[in-house]
Amino acid sequence: MASALGLLFISCITLSVVYGNSQIDDVKKYPDPSPQTRGSPWPAPKQMTISETQLTVDQATFKFEFSETEVCSILEEAFVRYFKIIFGSYSTSLKFSSWKTLRSNIGSRSRYSGTVSALQVVSPCIDNIYPSLTSDESYTLEISEKGVATLKASEVWGALRGLETFSQLIYQDGLGTFVLNATSIEDAPRFQHRGLLLDTSRHFLSLDVLKENLDVMSQNKLNVFHWHIVDDQAFPYESSTFPDMSMKGAYNAFTHVYTQENVKEIIEYARLRGIRVIPEFDSPGHTMSWGKAIANLLTKCYSGGKPSGDVGPVNPAFNTTYTFLQNFFQEISTVFPDHYVHLGGDEVSFDCWKSNPDITAFMENMGYGKDYAKLEEYYMEKLLNIVSGLKKAYIIWQEVIDNGAKVAIDTVVEVWKPGYVEEMSRVTSLGYKTLLAAPWYLDYISIQDWPRYYMADPQNFNGTKAQKDLVMGGEACIWGEFVDGTNLLSRLWPRASAVAERLWSPASFNDTKLATPRIDEHRCRLVRRGYPAEPLNGPSFCGHEYVYHQ
Image (cartoon, helix red, strand yellow):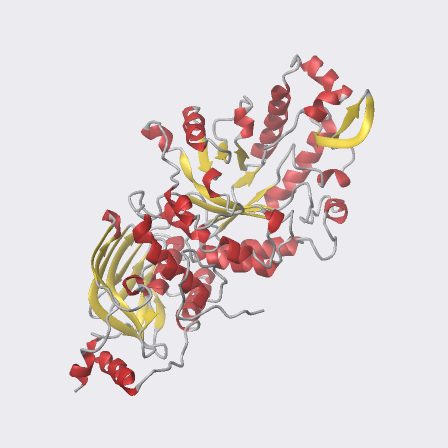
């Protein structure tokens, strides 16, 4: 009788998937929202083969096993986190519309071939290390038809990525049984830098919101938090060297600041998820909040030969400017452990510089004439020398190069403006490493915009192989004019997931038709895990709808 009832089971599997060749074969159609995508990881692995053999996972007995005698904190924390992710966010009480449905689901138990009782993790694991641009995030994941599951990685960062994939392979059947298919995966990222920019100046974001976003980043295999921490509007970073900068520059010096302990907390939270934290302190423009505390840092603007009362970008003519920058970035180099600092350099208006007599005299003395791009170059060169002297590397926005400034060949240029295809070709032809952000400004909203993000490719420009090898990856950006803690996560996810797959998965994996049911499934996965990921593709539903929580 059980076997007969088992025939009534509605299968929800993909018999064969080889992502490396962008093929999905023999996908069966059933009356379920998207059954062919259940257990389909996002972003897509480099190569993945799924067997029709299904196995159960018992919450009461399943465990993670580590190959070494001692587990480092990164994996200890990850094992606890992923046990909760796998088992803690699913419904444990299931309703059936009829006795016939119940019998059908009970009968389905007979079709499972065995149980996965443990995931054996084989990886080096060293405490007190940070992810970097050169981290190895590759891994292999084997789940045999006999239920033996093994995750192997050369570095702990690959083990973290493999744990996320393993968690996504598991789903529940109609009776609540945790199920996964025998699967073989070989995976590695296409690009080493897969970032997300958050702006905490235009609207302050709480630590809880930043942490939630780091969680979702890790669940999409993004590995760089580009923290645009200050700007014209506010200076929420609490500097130990210059405490007045937040006292005078933050929206509220007591409630809307990031203390030194707060920053360390975010960096550690990110580290445990294999995410780098790269701060951005943008200058010489975007510095109105800096000047509230640092005298004579900003340029005084003139009108009719007299001070107008307005100020402009950082004043490059004063030696005191560089004394301040040396002391400030000395602190930043010790607070933020990543090798890179983002130094901005975008949207610098020359009008105030042109009006200021001190700068006019400086320009004449330097022989710059009226070429204010040379003044910008002078400032950026001094700043880059300060930062490189502190054993840090740096990223800048594209305008510095567009304005003709000559910077060190190891400078990383981030391209953000329209016409990015030509700009990527031009910047790489100059020999600079590049990051692409231009097509992924997620604060610009339009209906069903994720396919546009999905199809944008950082290496889709005319250039040699050597030029394309200079592309480090890219970043999704969400500027803070109209987002804060109330809508950040829903505005970002799963739209940013489209960028995540573009930066992780092979370039050949670019079919939006195939991606549509998968990103819908991933969206429901995030909702089930407790994140308010917004719908992307019109009317739909998730088996487990979002429940507001605090």
